[in-house]
Length: 411
Image 1 (cartoon, one colour):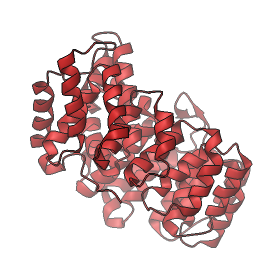
Image 2 (cartoon, helix red, strand yellow):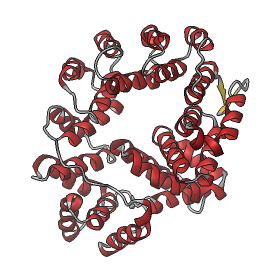
Image 3 (cartoon, one colour):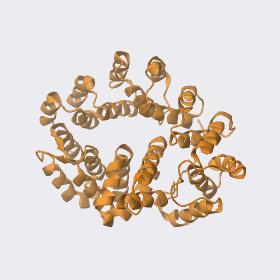
Image 4 (tube, one colour):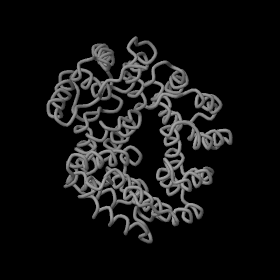
């Protein structure tokens, strides 16, 4: 397994870290906002760019933290060439991984070849990043190979990414068979990964085995209930209506699953208000949720609603995080960041509509991204924000919000 290095500052060191990031960017001649598309690099800048890529794996935290935004803000063509060279030739396994991640934000055509080559690489982090990229950029020809890897890939933090990459190919009956088989075999942590993936995928073909997990009322049954809620349909609605539990956290998850199964959205809001009661319960429960042991379930519930387009749930999640003490805040930060990675436009829309919430959103995303560490998804988020920055009119509220994220998250 390759060495894992921390990626961002902890809460106590954020001010110092932010100064290091900005000083590193300014020292290399880079702007604190997004690079101008199509800008050309001089020979000296190209040499400095190669040096910055090499510094992505430096053991000094400030140095490697400053290197990533310096590379992102360089002219795209030169940055892509320097990153591609590092992916294939660097002797530092961490640099190879980080270079691949940054390259995904540039939509480079070489990524397909790099991802294919990384599938059996000894570098766990690089392999995970390749799977995550394939989940968003599926290659149907790889289905047999990924099915075989499912039999042998046992790395705890890599396997969920492999499941997501495979699920993206579930038009193939062989893939469906392989994923459904994983629901009931292996370690619970692996079963949980595939159950969550199938739920987020809306995999109706997995409804029957998920109903079986819920019926057992054993490990993972609440996770299976949430997956059924995300899948929806008459069967899910019927089964979930009969599920109840004495555990307050589990019951909250089940209620959310029932809500999701019934939810019908119009303009980002539930058309018939089936989730209003659940949302109201979450607001009431949040201040004491840590003491009741349901903070994680409450945050996950708000996140689930927000991912389905419930703008009120997203705003409540921000309010809950800003007002929460540390434990509550961490749950809210993870939940908000999860929504941001899957629905980046929803976060930008919230910031534009609620200028007073912008600092809170930024602070929660800073902590949340640090806690979940979904590198490829974060890079896609950055790419989306940069694109929206340049498409927005100068001086517009949208450009202002995007610039705040770019500067505040130092990308």
